[in-house]
Length: 154
Image 1 (cartoon, one colour):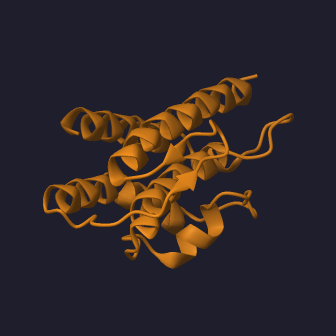
Image 2 (image 1 turned 90 degrees about the vertical axis):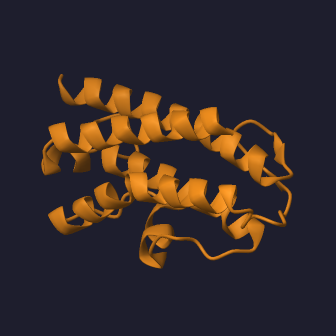
């Protein structure tokens, strides 16, 4: 699982770089033809990883509930986020993966409730499946972020 965590951390570092190079207006803007924005995709990736890994293992997520409620599957941007919320999201990008890796190595994830993901139809049956799917999920959203960034430059 070392490689899986390495890929997740690298993707999170890319997301962090995007947050650091885009303005607050840019991360909040929804270009014509899109239904969400850069920051929603980044925060949604964090929330999804937490729900797939922690909640389906019967554990409490390690991120604030208000972020889960705002960025979980089925949500969309409710308006522009503040600079404080942007910093909050940036601060948990890497720490949430570091905590998951530590918990994984310490055997915290003992049980898992099977879950079939809607995007690919795959059934996750154990924590390793959830972590590997998180890599794919974050890659999908990274691609979407790249499309959003291109649309913002038009």
